[in-house]
Amino acid sequence: MTDPDLGGMDLTVVAVADSEPYVRLSAAMFDALPGRGHTVGLAVVRSPLTPAPARLRRAVAGTGLADRRVPVLTLPELRRLVRRRVPDAVMLNCTARVADALADILPTGRRRPVVVSALAGPALPAGEHEWLHRARADLLVLHSLREVAAFSELGEKVGAGSAVALAGLPLPAARERRGGRPHRVVFAAQDGVPGTARMRERVLEALAGLAESRPDLEVVVCPGERRSPAPGGDYAELWRGLVGAGRVHDHTVLFRPGPVADQLDRARGLVTVGSPAALEAIALDVPVIVLGDVGEDPGATVFEDGGIFGTLDDLRALRFRAPTPEWARENHFHPPELEDWTRRLAALVRRARRGDLPARPALLDAGAHRRARRRVLADLGGAPSLLRQGPRVSWPEP
Image (cartoon, rainbow, N blue to C red; front, side):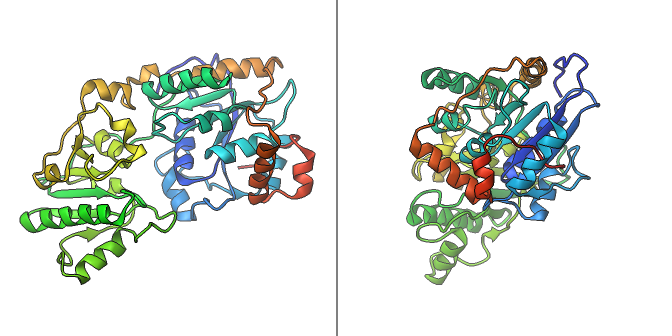
């Protein structure tokens, strides 16, 4: 934990998340608040992204919220709590369009709360849409020095007035490995990545070839969360097709759903096309290969210049690698003392308590954008009367 000075303030902070990564991030940010007298609460806004109860429990496991129920609330329920709680700060830790829509129903005026919005990360390349949809936040929170630099530069270009701050990304702490030689090769798959079925088949064929040539190894595919049908089939479907065509042998590769981190304890290495799971592996001192010969993936931008890109031939030869120290410092593995988001939050709360926060107008406020925002609110369960009443809202009891 970093030790920025909150000046003895006890804060009331509410976080609203819309998906499992943002639930995990919000819980980690609460844990990073210095001091013990704060009142914090986390709620999930009901949406198509709402995690199942088991996933919510997993997202807060090991945090200060582990023994608390994370409620899933409708907009009217979210609306009621701000009137009762009057929080110092509201963290809209949601996907961009949901964060923008929820900002539309927050209190305005001199005594409004500080609005914080964090990206779940990794967040490169810096996207203009992220800034435009989060421009009504007083504080934009990112998780690497490289992200802070990229979003600060982009914010100036788009006219965003929010402060930009650094927080740690919730990554597993390095731990002592279990006894025994690392024997597992883990492929962290992503839904629809690479973009063609043939490219995904090439990855599976390379994994199968590795398993057959090295029977001392356990080759595992972690399928990841399926969000939408992948063109040509997901990895499990493609594997069944390869087995049926006689191109691979069944049971040479094991498919194991669930968090990738669960498979890393005895891992020889992790391979991916661009999954954030590579950051988890690096945090656990597991070497990685980010495949660069199966098509481009924007998610791999964060790994550029890290010395960890490789090919399917590298996978077959088990040429896993660790990132360079220079890359690590700039990309999520910075010294904790550089994290400044709580100090910046404290300064904003002092201004809010004085009634000195500036107005934060939306940068996306043309008619089409307002209609799109209202559609998102309606999709989140906002009744027409709620939408007409505008930003006189509160947050429900977590």
